[in-house]
Amino acid sequence: MISTYIVLCVAAIYGVMNVKIDFKVNFFISDDTYAGQYLNAVEMYFNEGFQATFYVENDELDFTSKEVQI
Image (cartoon, rainbow, N blue to C red; front, side, top):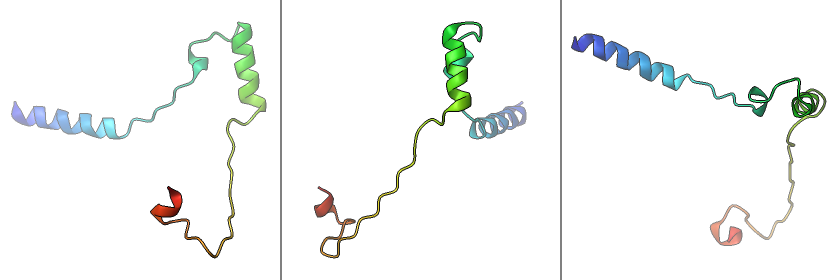
């Protein structure tokens, strides 16, 4: 009885650790509606988000210090 409980707990913990979250608003909106068609077109033709890279040159300040960041 206890060994079965331990095996089930280990299996549940393993399953929880491997859950991948994939939530989209499209799951709740039908493809037949205008909103659904719009969301599908946006997903197909446009990238969401952006990536920015900043390069800063300054030999006088140490940007990693707490005093400078405050």
